[in-house]
Length: 376
Image (cartoon, rainbow, N blue to C red):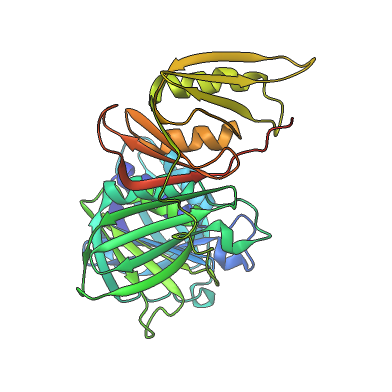
């Protein structure tokens, strides 16, 4: 094998493919990146039996071949090389990398022991890359980080024709985003539970292309997998078993009060007041006509309060939230105005975004947040 490639192209491709390499590989070969050359193309692949990653770039190929080298080491080397063309060649059990006056000799790993990458499942449809990345980040914020309940660490993808719905929960908040996409079949219906961390990393990394292809198995190749492809990059990951709680019945449709607050001053006020909130203690929000009062701390502890303008329709209400969960939702709505809709002070509140104080709420993204019971 012998090929030449631009330094920046190689460094970016290696860094992306190496992201999926396991920190503690179950087998030594799984610490490797598989480099394969074809006609004017170089592909780099990584696989840990759960997640696979493959990227293709243009290269000047002199001799076609395949080699397996340490992914972490190649990533470190590629990142540190001078800005000159890189040439990589193999000789027996060694690979030599030359860039300008820099020269590295790497030991290779046995290619025949490397597992075959899973096949890409059947294509389900496409969605604009930036829209997909935004939707995933909005929803993944509500997924649990607790691996003892794997089902809650996932994002649920539900396909109904031209509507793609993403949902996630950690039992304390529930995030749902609906978007339009282009399905391969107009009557397509499917559900998949995807690990949130993998989905978030993948969605962010595929924004370089105009669209992302989503591929789900229909019982043939790629059973139990979901695949994503865009900008010359391809990722597959195993699906989680089970399903998150049914969410449609959890979201209230009638409210006793609805408040609209400009997102930026609201967010800054929550951050300031939360400075005195001890771990696991809430920020209290009191909504009255024209004003929102935020408070935290009590008794002999440090205390803080602040007031911001708010438009309130309906009954006055006092409610308390975990400040981190509230801030996560405020950053996720990505709108100039936040709308909070309430039923009672002890039942979940619904957060959504608006383009202006007098505009209709954008219900394509909804963030349901459980209140914290207030003592006394």
